Length: 335
Image 1 (cartoon, rainbow, N blue to C red):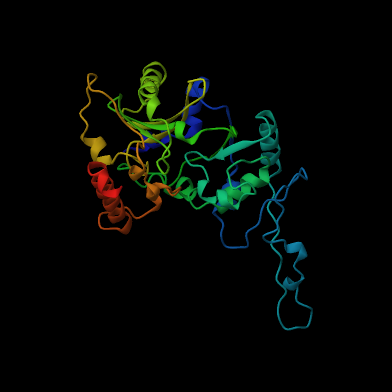
Image 2: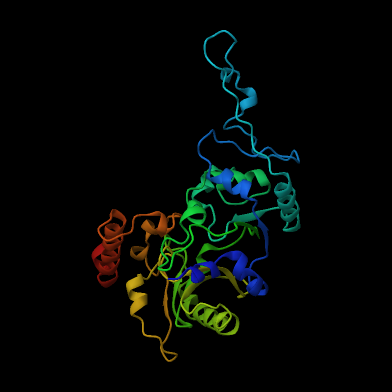
């Protein structure tokens, strides 16, 4: 994998081309001061001070103005500690406020490649739904998986020359409360041919089996009409969502291999597929309970884990794949 292939998968790179067939998104370049704020773990956990007085999540984690114990009386022999002041990003906050309002009052935030899925637990709703800049800052500051974007995006590149992208971006995507997780799919493209499709949410059994052939035809037609030849890489993956009206929307693009989850496939399987326009696309969904894969419900990108041969994660995936194959071949043994 090359750096240019990873760069093409940044949302600010692909969204302008695919805007008509994607989720409405507004993108802001992040100031370097905000990037430094996200990476700084030397002090207390502070949320930015709101300039619009709409701080839905005030600095309840650490509020230096209310901590009198930080002050040491004169003559005690100890030096008084200077309280850490919350950072402030007035221009970015006002831009984000305006964008949230124009997107209907609630958004789903992400950076160049990743969303802070691992920190959803800390929000008031337990989701990535955000209505204020402070909620976004909290999710980003608490997320370990965003470290991938900040520090490790090029770790799997065989021509790595960069430690990080030149600029970071905040993408605000319109929030839809009624999205059905079973209707999101990951599509695998090899040699500019669609070779595989996997259900994106593989941790639960959903009753969509009867629609499998219709879904396959919708995605194949969408790829032929809207994606093939427009995304410049030859090998890549893209995620789509199918609406109740059977419209297909691009959700994201990801590199082929590396930190991209293969879901119901393995990368060895996908690499061995021979590219031919005559071959049928392999379409996999969770069709029975024993095919559910709870071990894949992780928001941490592969690059942020030790996935090398012999590692714990490598052994876990080998065991999980072996068990899935056994249960698929002999389902009656687990009834």
